[in-house]
Image (cartoon, rainbow, N blue to C red; front, side, top):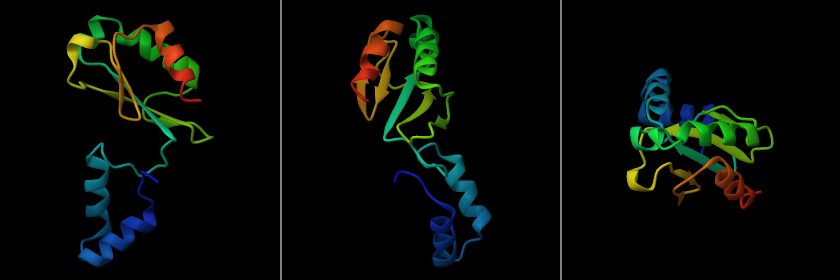
Length: 120
């Protein structure tokens, strides 16, 4: 499911004999973990310096308009989750958007709209 419900955290806490609040602290510290359901498609828009100066804010605005999401949220249909990341490691391709692990470079607002259509 790509997220950790409270019941799972409670089981880990009990099994490891670690207080639940410590488990929650660890889980919420790392971005790899989520305590809320994630959409079927995870969208990551790079907002690092190279992507930013090449137009990432406009790409992010377009993605937000198309999905109705702000970064860190998932839509009610559990179709999309949107996140921003500081760098995805391919600055020469910026702005970069990663959907379900698939990298899309040289993004522009219109191109991001076309790419998102492939994930509906």
